[in-house]
Length: 79
Image 1 (cartoon, rainbow, N blue to C red):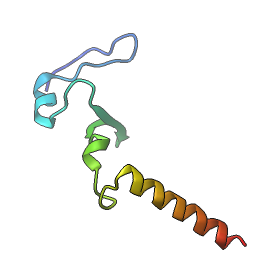
Image 2: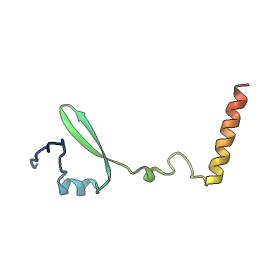
Image 3: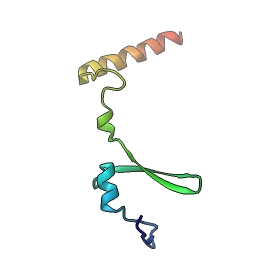
């Protein structure tokens, strides 16, 4: 454990050994939560790393056609 000061802006520097262990690099995002009177910091995956978890990636043209079909279906449902 190492001790650190909180800056006047409320900032704390994450120790290098913690950043390395979690794979946190400059400009990465982290989640900060209060749990049982403790501050817990967790790395948040890059949004681009989540590609594909909702299904296969579509080309821009396929995406446009899918949007148009969805809008048409919604309009038809309201008639």
